[in-house]
Image 1 (cartoon, rainbow, N blue to C red):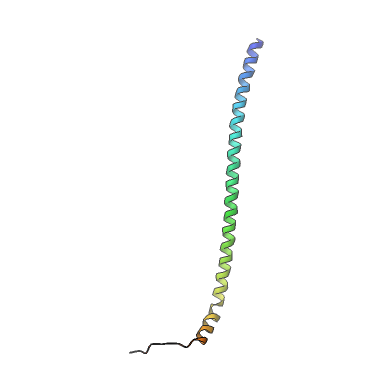
Image 2 (cartoon, helix red, strand yellow; image 1 turned 30 degrees about the horizontal axis):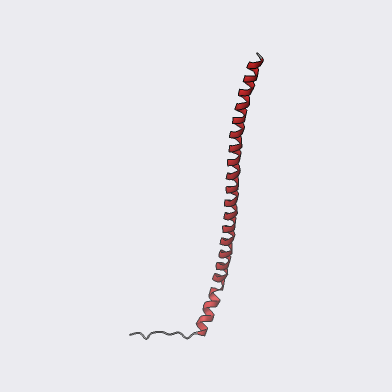
Length: 84
């Protein structure tokens, strides 16, 4: 009777070890997936920040375009080909 109980407990202990190993593997995979997702989020935020900076630069250039065109046309004489 005692031997059977010990055998049963050893079997259950083996199953628990197997289950624990499976859970540890799943936890490790979840941690890696979370790290990957966090890195992708950081990369995306960095890319978005660069995009916003570029858009602001282009907006400023666009806003300055009329004055830039006016000053460049004042500085250089127009060279037109004679019409035939």
